[in-house]
Length: 326
Image (cartoon, one colour):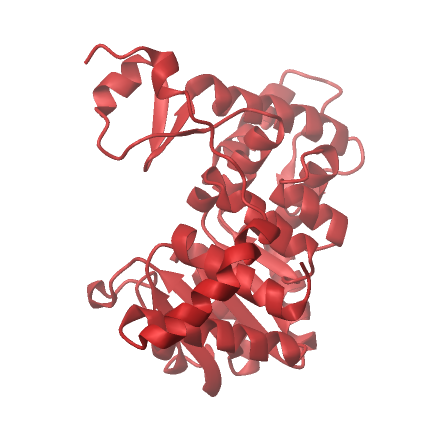
């Protein structure tokens, strides 16, 4: 497979905006209403649920896994936060990775699922689904950024929570398509309960290892429990609570887990490509969460089956247009 590296890395991933999505979403949703069948009904119900949620004044938590941040959905999520459509974010540690790397100008590229992975390894290219990430655009930029930041932060205090580190990372990024940047600007906390499972988390470890040989630089202490208190405050302060869940895993579960302590979400919209029959949390429909007290029995809720990179731009664009935010 003699293919030049530069040919594979010829199409950079471009970030989408809410305005981009809104231009065609309104017409598309109206068309889907007419179709009437199968998955289109879930899409239509999702926009109806979201509009009801926002008009009720609910506090909205947005959850998603890091893989979406490697795509152009990154810009859409950042725009979603900028326009006040989420009051909190729950995500995985890899979101810090991809947002910091791309926020510094390191590019990701459009590829294919079917590429030969052994060949990509020879070319020093990571494959994330059908997204291509050159080795030099991932690990080193994230570790370098994180070490410089941590060296500044430990001079202020040693103990930091994941949401505090997200805020400080956003403070240092200038890319307007950055999720962390917009969250910092809008005062939206970014919670990552599994932060250590990431290049960012590993950079905390390597920073602490380096600090052993320094008499001046102290190690960082990561306090994940502190963020649980912050989430609890937001959850219990909310008159009504809404959740938008893109994908599954720890991000989705942390959102609905905390919702159960106030008798569940009042509004829930989930998008997932995972099947229900494998018994996973990722594939569990919102109705299953009712049995756990994580979604209220009378809540407005819907699970949309499919790929979030395809579906979320449609529903986010439509809702933004209807709400008059773009």
